[in-house]
Image (cartoon, rainbow, N blue to C red; front, side, top):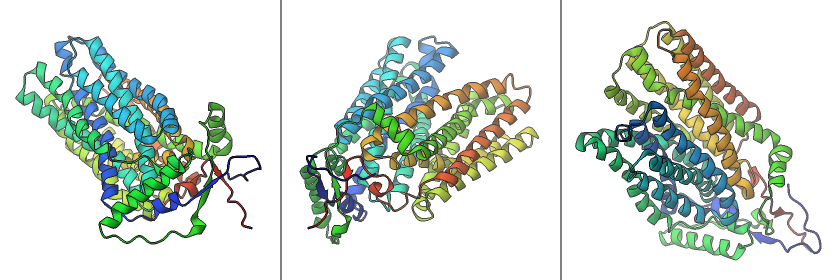
Length: 483
């Protein structure tokens, strides 16, 4: 909420920076932002697939529990990275963090490929996870603040959905390395793929500016204006005419100190309680469903349909492509039809298709192929909905706490999602009965549908709105009265 500047208070800066950024047309500058920053989710999907292949298990003589811990330690690293770097991205800036976190990931993943034992592998998997966890906070913040408001929804959703492009790439890379190299080298070379891609991207990121919005609210108004001047100059150099920005769209801000934890709690619990419920519900429901199906998919195909370990990957690839296609195809409608309607629709349809698949699964009317087709249809919609959860959390809270909001909600979602593989593994048992897993599928579908209903009831119609209109920056003050 805006406050009046009092006598003796810092002199407010009146700026058109947010309005200037939102009135920009789509240009090659925005493509550079999407390409340079959006790779994070591709790398995450790639990492998960490489570890699921588990080629290191034979070399290090790891038990099934130790192989599982290799994935778990990566997720723990993500949570720690999100918590540590979430606050840093709000206090030190988006650019410093999206360079630092990518460098940490590069080091962790690359060194993991040089591991000589399981302990060394786990240490570097944790480090790589910290880098990716930090990426989630810094990148979502930067993308939302650099992309014009009328494109923000589709871009954020598409970028988050590229996780599945990484997963598909990881599946292909795993098959290729296993066929071209010995077992002892295949998994090591797989771990080098991400760092090679990352080195290219870190070069591109050097040319992406700091968020002018972040600069403006952290006492660096002149630098913010200069940054926008540079962006506009590059666009005009390409022959694009930019309309003037009306003065009534100006915003007054003062330099805001780092937000203490007590004020952060006040923002979440007192100032925006409904938005906190909305964010938590969306993040937790999609995370639980995704982890439930994603981590049990292979076991279901092997245990109930008799698919061999070697052929499971052929069923995963179309599943990954379906998940990738959903955000790319549906993202546009989150900006046109609107956030609340599309979130509700994607969560609802995903849940209903999963209900249908559960009923047919219980009746033993599916094959491995038709089961995978139904999963693909369900998660075509669920993937867009899951991506919109990250979009929602990143745009409905004030700029000064955006990174921390993403980090805390991400951690809660990861914690809830981590329960799903354990629960669904227990429901599968020895594969002698379909009943318990059917109930699990119905519960997962119901949880997803509840998330959609909550979004419809208390969601925010943020489509086309400036971030500053969705949630006032904490540094915002009332414009001085004109004499």
